Figure (spheres, rainbow, N blue to C red):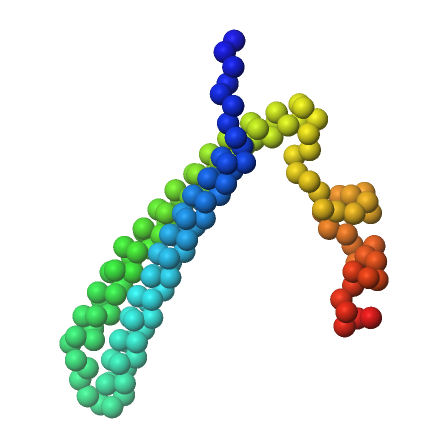
Length: 144
């Protein structure tokens, strides 16, 4: 049976994390853009309402802008959802790739991660120590 090529998992993991962060920021940027269009639409609605409150006819451009912003906002929302779906697919794929490496660690007896927990936390199944198990030297200085 042919051997699988050796892949440096640390570099692979870093590359995957960078790509996922980039995808997350793109989706986040799209949602921020969506909100900005919503704010612009709300401002135009307020302009329209102030004209009506003054008993005057609002400019036609205000209503046109509100309609335009709503239309643009829908297209931006679709793009943001698409980017999120792509990111989730990549997350699932990366978990699949890294799971294979973790299972090989399990076979080799190496830990899947290095726990930062204390003995008391490890017995409770928690990764962080409970407040009662913390030593006074680790407590907050203002509580001494």
